Image (tube, chains in turn brown, red):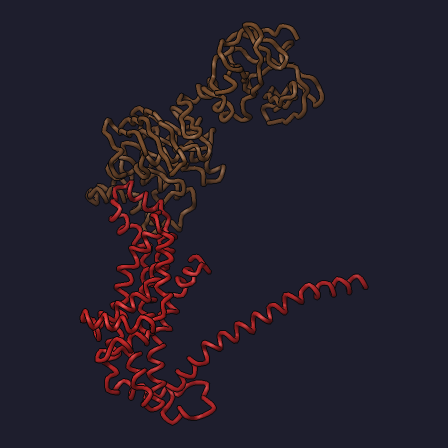
Length: 357
Length: 283
C-alpha cells in the first residue's frame, strides 16, 4: 500500500519525445487507468514507474520514497504483462510462488499465500499445470495471481485483457475489479479501451502525444472533457464538433445563435455528445442521412450545414432518411472549445433558445 | 460431354507445370540425398565387413557385422591416444564456444548497442579467412607463446572456427525467449543475473547444448589446423591423414567410419536448432 508521485517525467527515444514532463499523483489504494491510443506514451510511463525503462528527466516516488534510481525489484511493485509472461518451465504453483521464493519466505508460508491468491482467482485446481496446458484466460489469472502473491505496494498492469476474446474480457474485467477492490492495492492500469477504463477506474488519466491531458473520475472525463481530444476520444460515437463564429456577446453555430459565448482571443468550436441531443421545436435543423437501430437506441447521422452530426435518440422516435430533424442540446451538456488549442472553455449552462434563423 | 472433356483437358494443363516442377524437385532431392548417403553407406559397409569383403564387388546391401577391421583399428598404435586427443580438443572447444558464445549471443539478442551489426558481421568474417592462409603465422605465433602441439592451443583455433555458429545460434535462441519473461522476473525480485539463471537459462538450455554439440562436431571434423599445429598430440583426423596413406584399406574404412559416426549422430540430435539458425523453422 503506497501512494505514487510522478513529477515532470519526460522520456526521449533518440529524437522522438515519448513523454513530455508528465505529472501524476495516485493516492494510496486508488485505481488509476492510463488511457490513450497506441503511441500516446501510456506504456512508456508505466514501464518508467516499474523501472523497466529509465526516465530522461523527472522523479518517481512510491510511498514517499524516490525510486527512480532503483531496479524494479527494489521498488515494491508487481506487474502484469500484456502477453502474461507466465514462466513456461515452471508449474502454476511455482509461478505464483516465484516472487515469494525470491524473498526467501519459508516454504509453508509460500504454500499458504499461493493457495490464498489462487483461491481468489479460482485457479486452485490448476496449480500443478504448466503454462502450455493453460488457456489464455487461465494464463491471465496466473499472471494476476503471481503479481498479487507478493502483496506489492503498487500493482502495474499493461493492457492485461487485450489478448482475450471479447466475452472473456468482459468476464475477467468484472472479476478483476472484484479482486482488486478486495486487495485494496494501489493500481495503475494501462489500456486503450475506453469502456474498460470507465468500468474499472477510480480515476482516468487520458494520455495524448506524450502528455496527460486530463486526469479525473470517469463521469467527469466523460461529461466535462478538458480538451477537444478527450471529447472525441472518449465516448462512442464520439462527440460532435461544429465551428462557431462570434456574433457580439454570442456565437453562431450551424446557423443558430447562442447569446453567450466565452470571451477569448481565438476562434471557437462547439461540442455536444450525440447522447445529449433531443428533438425540439427549435435548435439544429439538419437532414437525416442514415438511421441505425442499436437496440435500446437509434443512431441518427445528419447533415448539418455541411457537417456530419450524430445523435443517439430514443427508439420510439420515428425518423426516416431524407427528413429534416430539429435537435437541441440538453441543458448543461454542450461545451465551448478553443478551436486552435482544443482546450475546453466553458459549459453552456442554460438551455439557450435559438434566436434568428 | 464436350464441356466435360474441355474441363478435364484444362485441369490437366493446369496440373502439368506443377507436376513437372514436382518431378524436378524430387529428382534434385534424390540426387542430393544420394550424394550424402552413398559415401556414408560404402564407408559403413566396408568398415563393418570382413577384411576380404573390402575389395569385393558388388557390395552386400547389408554389411556382415564383422568387427575385425574395427578391432584392428582400435589396436593400431596411436589410435586410442589420438581418439582421446580428439575428445579433449572437441570438449574444450565446446566449453569455450559456450562460455564465450553465450554472452555474445545474449548481448546481440537483448541489447541495442552501437556496432551491433558490425559485430555480427565481424563474427562471420572470422570464417572469411581460409585457414591455410593463417596456418603459418599461427604456427609461428603458437611456437613463440608455447601453445604449439598442445590440446589447448588447438582448441583455441577450433573455438575460433566454431564461434560464429555458436554466437548466431545462441543469439537466435535468446531472441526466441520473450523479453517479458525476464522483465517479469525482475519485477518479482530478480537481478539481471538471477533472472538469467532462473528464467532464461532453463529455457535456453537445450539450444545451448545444441550449439555446444555443434562446436564439438566442428572441432571433431577439423583436419587442417590439427595437422599443422600438432605433432605429438595429434587428433584422430590429423593422425588418420598422416598414417592412413600407408595403411591397409580396411583400416582406412574403419578410421573413416569412426570419424563420421559421432558427427552424424550429434548433428542429427541438434538438427532443429541448425534449421532455426538459418531461419527455416522457428522451433
